Each structure stands twice: as C-alpha cells, then as structure tokens.
Length: 214
Ligand SMILES: Nc1ncnc2c1ncn2[C@@H]1O[C@H](COP(=O)(O)OP(=O)(O)OP(=O)(O)O)[C@@H](O)[C@H]1O
Ligand SMILES: [Mg+2]
Image (cartoon, rainbow, N blue to C red; front, top):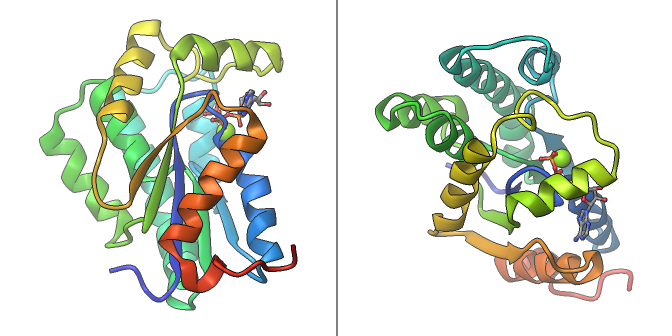
C-alpha cells in the first residue's frame, strides 16, 4: 500500500520526453510549496547505478533474464531505501520510469513470459503502486529522431531493433487502468507540461489545487 505520500511515475518509450518533463514538473511542485523526491530508473542508489551501468552499456551483452533481474534488483533497492520511506513520510515521489517499464521492455519487448515477469515485478515493487502514471505517447521514429538530434549516445536498449521498440510502444499504448493517463508526447514542451500538471492537480487537489507561488 502506498503511504500518505503521493507517487507519480513518468513512463513512455525512448525519447518520449520523460526526463525533460521531470524537471519543470518538479519546479511547479516547488511553486506549490512541495519539495518532491526525484528518482530515475534504473538508478537512484549505489546498487541501482551499478545495475544501470551493466544494463545500458552497449558494449556489454546481457541476456533477457539477467536484464530482467538487474532492473528488478535496482528497483527493489530504490523502493526499500528511497521510495517507500519517502511515501511513508508523506513526501511526493516523482519517478522517471517504474514497474510499467519492465512490462513494456522485458515482457512485451523481450518476450519474457508474463508468469515470470509479473510476479517478480510485483515483488520488486514491494507493494508500492503509483498513484498516477503519466504515459508519454510518441511513435518510435519521433523518439529516435529526437535522440539523434540531441546527439545522445544510444544505450544498449536504445540500440534495439525497430521491431523491439514497436512492441514496447504498442504495449504502452494499450495500458489503461486506475491512475493511468496517456499524454501526447508530441505536444510542444509547455503544453505537455500543462497537461501533465493538470493530471497531477486532479490526482492530488489537496496538495496542488491552490495557486502556489504563481
Ligand atoms: N515535447 C517535446 N517536443 C520536442 N522535443 C522534446 C520534447 N520533450 C523532449 N524533447 C527532446 O527530445 C529528446 C528526448 O527527451 P528526453 O531525454 O526527455 O526523453 P526520455 O523519455 O527521457 O528518453 P529516454 O527514455 O531515452 O531517457 C531531448 O533532446 C529533448 O530535448
Ligand atoms: Mg530519460
């Protein structure tokens, strides 16, 4: 169970704008007197950063099952040492990716069986569920073109085939459920920020509905 805090997760394929959105969203939260705990996956702990290096290095081959467990090891550590304590203390946690990424990349993308991925994924999250998941929808060629334009060095996952990324994107597009909202990742940045902020205010009006410092 999520504690008294608020858990907001940004999801979506490569280059969809998650990391770009996180900073300005955090800025709007601060304007409303809330200092969020910002995390990114994989990472956010020493164990997680080591896993990140192993996972993303394009020179370092990793099998699908090892990849799954490296992501989950990073998440388990992040949840137990950062996310769960912050939520229990009533903080707002803003995470760049969470469990849904594992479903999209390791289950849909890699084709690992659901009966392996889903229980392990649940175990790693240790009962922490996002209150709000914002999925940024963009086509693969849009995300890839943005990464190339920005001169990003493609990591091991970025460099996967168009078919792999197609399966990831199709999975994201089909996700629905409590607390899941799809946003058009092709919106200009400021409009995307407004759309994301509107969802956050709707999810937690008691924290954010006022004008804040604006
Ligand atoms: N709304 C937008 N419109 C146009 N370009 C954008 C938008 N948002 C982000 N970008 C640009 O797209 C590129 C990828 O953005 P970003 O790194 O935030 O994506 P990401 O979802 O975090 O990707 P990754 O999964 O690789 O971490 C960056 O160069 C960024 O400046
Ligand atoms: Mg990013």
